[in-house]
Amino acid sequence: MNAPADSLFAHLRTRTTDPATSRRAARRAAGAASDHRSRILDAIRATPGMTPREIAGKTGLDFYQVSRRLSEIPEIEPRGERDGCRIWFPKAVQP
Image 1 (cartoon, helix red, strand yellow):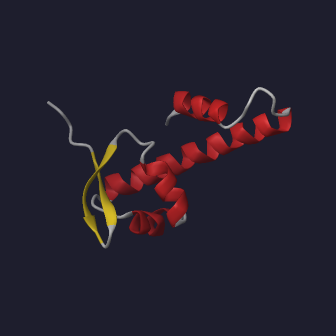
Image 2: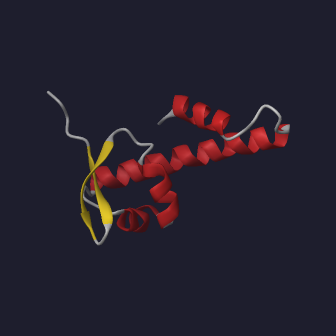
């Protein structure tokens, strides 16, 4: 889904002084993050208007995994709040 973003995030999660094992772990984490973003986007497209807790229930991810990824998905946007949480929708298609 976001291959360029994954490479960017992997780079930001490591320092040049980190050992190779840390760089490998960052690449694996970036792969997991990409999977999470895809699952979240699919859930929001299928059921617009969910809170992070509701998205977690649909995707099998936990609340914190969902919350960390929402701002990384350019195809969605928050519109309003319910129960103190933002409600997420797919972005409207622009003509």
